[in-house]
Amino acid sequence: HLAGATPLPRAVATPPAVRPPAADLGDVVGQLRARRALEVAAAGGHNLLLMGPPGTGKSMLAQRLPGILPPLSEEQALASAALHSIAGLPVETGAWRARPFRAPHHSASAVALVGGGRVPRPGEISLAHQGVLFLDEMPEFDRRCLEALREPLESGQVSIARAAGSVTFPAAFQLVAAMNPCPCGYDGDARIACRCTPERIARYRARVSGPLAERIDIHLDVPRQDIDPARFGGAGGEPSAAVRDRVITARARQQTRQGCCNAELDVAALKRHCALDDAGRALLARAAERLALSARSYHKILRLARTIADLDARAAITTDHLGEAVSYRMLDRGMQSDARA
Image (cartoon, rainbow, N blue to C red; front, side, top):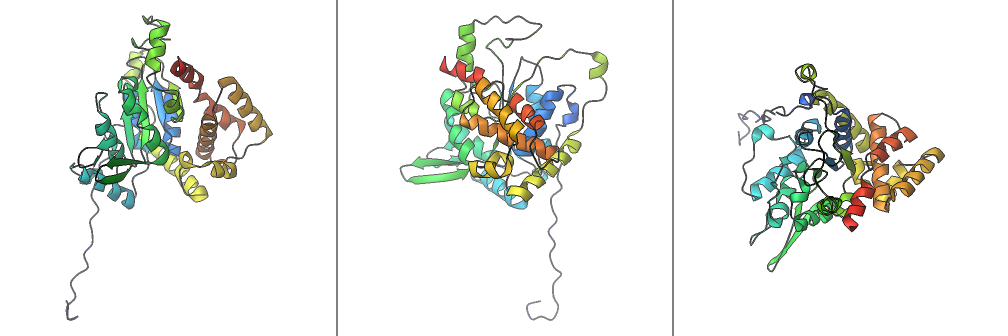
């Protein structure tokens, strides 16, 4: 072969077989509004907070988000594998192109969540790079751990400084969080009376600070559903594969138009790609006044509306798209007032 007389056959890499996600969105019966919010979050790369009583399907929905996300590119898969290797974790070849899903327990320390140690290693937020970080029972996490998420949510990376130097790990993750509305879990429930005082509820919700809540694009109430044995024993909802196709199409529109997901649009890009007509500006102005929106929340609504328009295959954002986006921010005023309390 080296002399050029008898060339060896060219080596062809065999791509690893990709296992389909075990958790399918078709398993979720009902909760149409939550399913829609999950699709919007996947299509635009938006962060999501699910709030509702115990047993309404919040964790079930969160676990199915990776199954409707586009597969990782080769470059993204290599970056994810490298981070797992640095942390001393095995790399599953069957999940090579699958988005990582990390769900740390609420007792996790700040080092476990963000990264660190004498020899700095990546934490859960870096292990979830290009994937999903799920925080179940979010208010039960240590307040310092939650506040440490604020900068990575904005920058997509985390820097760990030590005496010998500093290390920066990528941490472009999609946050999905779940929480009860109060300590007992039944505030606002139509069937079970809440046993918490207003002061206890305010203290519980204040564990998630206003600045952190603002960085979460979608705040959604997940109410209790009536149990119908015939309905729950029959076919489920739309499967993940069908939803994933729409998500991939919407993300392709975003890449063609601006080269990134809608959740990553900066202020200058918002002006170019999220222009509103007079009716849209009037609607958003009323929402900003009624909900006491900050500038960050205002921009979140514009990004959400752009994603909803992309799912609808529309070039322009309409008042219908804005109205749906505003409905996903209805917890803004409550969360901020609780944080001040």
